[in-house]
Length: 119
Image 1 (tube, helix red, strand yellow):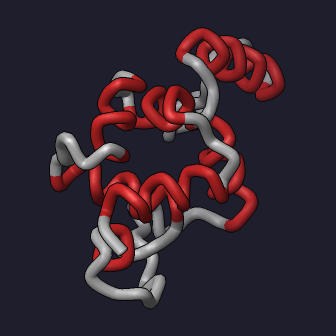
Image 2: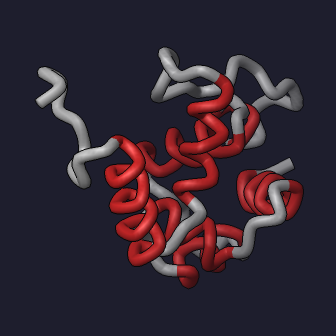
């Protein structure tokens, strides 16, 4: 199975539109459409992000193996709950992300995100 088919199938399994996936990646929906029609290919960096988002290996995504393999994890230190939150966050529009961050900062108590020093 080729990359374009794998991408489309994985995207649909995750109930994600081309537009939503593009927003997660910071690209246009047309880019995702072109990949799924085998008219162009994403960069290596984007392939890595796609593999991480879909929790598969890059080899699986590229159609080099039918084994999901070792998923690409850019955030190996995250708990399952944190990873789930990050996956949801990536599906939000830019405006929704800003509002969510402001809300979360308010929950922390001071209206600003905490710094590493806690101030």
